[in-house]
Length: 143
Image 1 (spheres, rainbow, N blue to C red):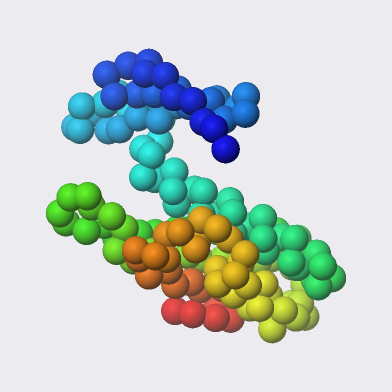
Image 2: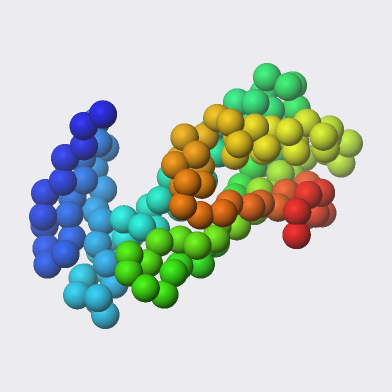
């Protein structure tokens, strides 16, 4: 994989990944212009995208037909440089019929985080990743 970055401002860069372009930057208080997400925040977005794709694919193979899948990620950072993420908590929100197979949903998320998502595998080398799962706003796993 090859990705290109070109500086476009004080601390901003335009990233080109296979023709998909986006800007990374940092907050004004850190010397940037806040013209795009920070590279570190993109890691969380990448984790959600990677895991979400896994779960959607696994649930389709399991024939679990849901209406909506959404996710959030929250992370605590170390206080000293390089200020890596210490703990990441993911929340998965599935909406659909009340009789969806809860065990299959739990298994799909578990497989994503522990086996299939390479972003989770890389991040888990330096931080803990835990998660909660909600079905129709009802907690079915986690805290």
